[in-house]
Length: 110
Length: 111
Image (cartoon, rainbow over all chains, first blue to last red):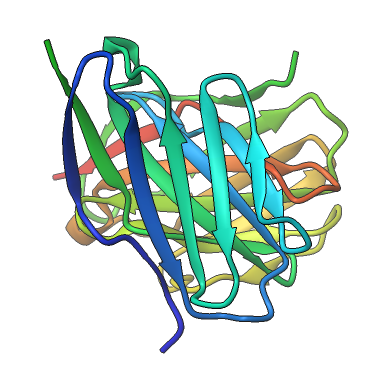
């Protein structure tokens, strides 16, 4: 069936390095994608979004890349900080609903 | 500032009890959602609502019902709680652009 998935369930990076979190989606009709960050004990928080007519979007220390040819989405976090430790979810919009991936846990090594 | 408020952060209930989870948003959004979140299963959609008194089943509606009497309030009801409904429940409202705003979550334990 169709799904939104992630390549790795966990990712460890050194503080100060760049982090790249990947996501695969299977519905080529999806027109909108979002990345969420969820810290322990809290609800998911919006990080950045991208529409299907774009292939790159930048925010503060974050960049989302969209490759529609291979149905792949990535989140890049520059100069990773301890406060970036969280679970990161990608989501794709199908009709009015958002379908979420499983999540990747990002841990930061000092 | 955008705000979605869930009435209870932590609840402990017994099997067979009726459970109400309340959610209020202050953004005048039309669309609201209830998800449950379980380890290894991610976020799964239970019910959603596009307008007052309207509701649609999500992917896992069994054992749940919802109520949307006012635009700002969306309630999730467990008519007879069971242990397999122990979970984190997340409410969200949706901006026209598609972005969801989540509450802090309600962690329910059913004994």
